[in-house]
Length: 314
Image 1 (tube, rainbow, N blue to C red):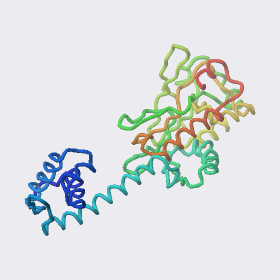
Image 2: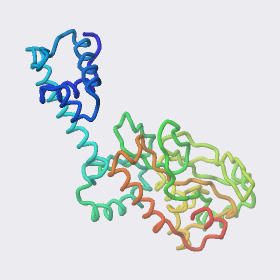
Image 3: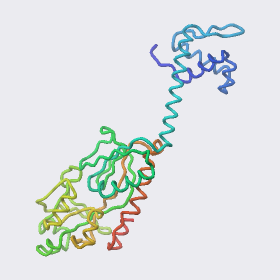
Image 4: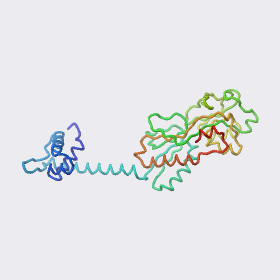
């Protein structure tokens, strides 16, 4: 036997064997008797065995047919259990969801969000991994990765959850010592910058925009790090100009600990959920993504920003 039997052939055979009648099997399956005869013949040919003793008035199982009936019933029962489990996966909010995210955003937003989500869905477990490096969703068996800006993987599904921008900022002490830049190109020679290696990638040129204008700047940097919080501390200490997500520095801007420089310029860095399967197949994934989108819409708001920046955030 080189080819496995078709499930439909096994289903038809089991039905006929239980009822000991091709005609009654046809009625139960709502097909023609000829269809039943054809499927059973194909199964016998595939197995190279005779499964029924046939006479003009009745049918009965051969010893081989008895074996196929027992195994076939178990197989169909297991398939029914599989379908029920898959249905529950689509509908029930339970089990464990594996999530990855950068450390900064995870601590600032995912941590309080997960606590609020758990209050609503106590049966939903969360396995959260905070890492400042690229994540292999399949290799690391992650259900969802949250990405802030950057290049999105084409082989996966990506859904934008919130608008976000990165802005240029510096401490008042730095600006008092070095002055304010008047043009982005001054960041290449006349000022010192702090670079963040997003998820362990090499420090890249800063691609920024202002209205319809786009510009790429190669920042003059003697300090770089793969952690945004450390970079912010350096910036607060007056070490240089930082390009950082506005959600990370909004508090310091409001308190006057940091000052926005070149306020007309920013970098788009929207928040995306990246995952490998459709949310229609997983109630856990669907609830997490939809709830997080609502949470970010309510909580990623900043005061005192100009109209252009607010337009990008909404």
